[in-house]
Length: 137
Image 1: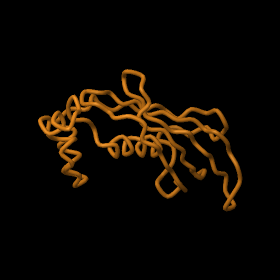
Image 2 (image 1 turned 60 degrees about the vertical axis):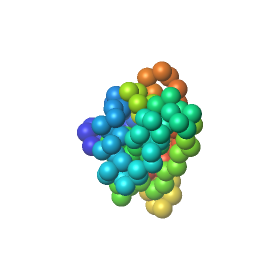
Image 3 (image 1 turned 90 degrees about the vertical axis):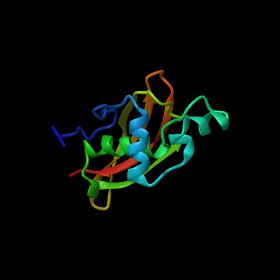
Image 4 (image 1 turned 45 degrees about the vertical axis):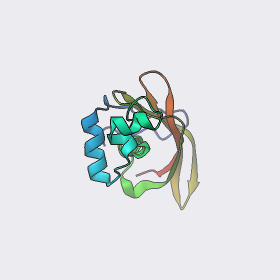
């Protein structure tokens, strides 16, 4: 974590950029996650299934969102997070992770912030969106 995060509604999380997503990225993620779904690693298989090419694992983008949250809160301060998968992340895409504080409230005897989080690819398409709740350090 770098400088202290502004724990107030409207505060933006520092953006996180990842990519471009390469075939190597997909192969490494498949090995690390043990997620070897052929749509993500075999172009011929993906095309036979009606896709233009392989595309990134949705959980890879979710991992990038975890890195975004980790910039402002250590893991033990993350109370919850959830996302919806909205669109695929194609090979060669650059992923932009962003978020902002929706509200701050008191619970568990601590200040908590509810965050809106999302990933967007270089074309402007939002691929994941969701919320997270973090406790102030």
